[in-house]
Image (cartoon, rainbow, N blue to C red; front, side, top):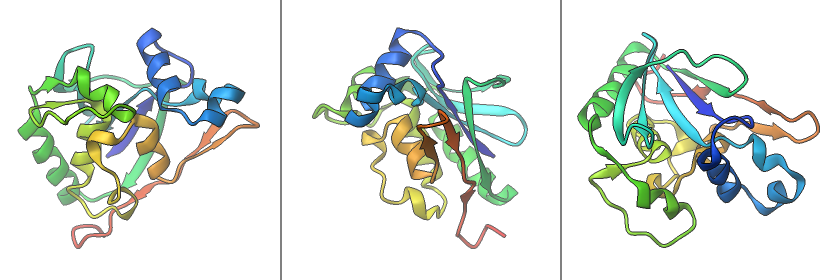
Amino acid sequence: MKLIFYGNQKGNWIDKLIRWWTSPLSWKLNGDWKYAPSHVEILFSDGLMFSASGRENKARFKKHNPKGKAWIRVPSETDRASEAIVRLFCTSLAGRSYDYAGVSGFALPIKQDKRKWFCSEITTRALQQLDISELKCLVPHKTSPLDLLLATGAEFDSKFKEWKIKPLKVLNELGS
């Protein structure tokens, strides 16, 4: 199982707006906001991906081949039982509506709609089904794709314009 983030200067105007809006001021000033992610998915070991998609208006599973520099990949050290827990949670939310208003909750005081989801909210909540210490402090409906990527321990190298990635480690009894 991996987390995959869409970013690295690719996408439409909405992707660019999300990158700019959720980036810290220093990134906005030096141009690093262009390398922030605008979307996140869970990629299961069988190649099936899960997230909430504004393009498809719902939370869904999808077969997709995320290749190229547009995708930032964060591996996780999970076993089959841990992956099954995350997949079961995702299955329970598949088909739920996309939360267009909730996306602006990164910066505005928007009330959470518990029936609707956006990508980093649903992904964070799914991963919180496991005991991943880096993600415990995140509030899913206030978590942007950049927040989630940084919480995994990833660091952006501003000089070389690239991400340095660390694998997520599961600490519960289901992990190895």
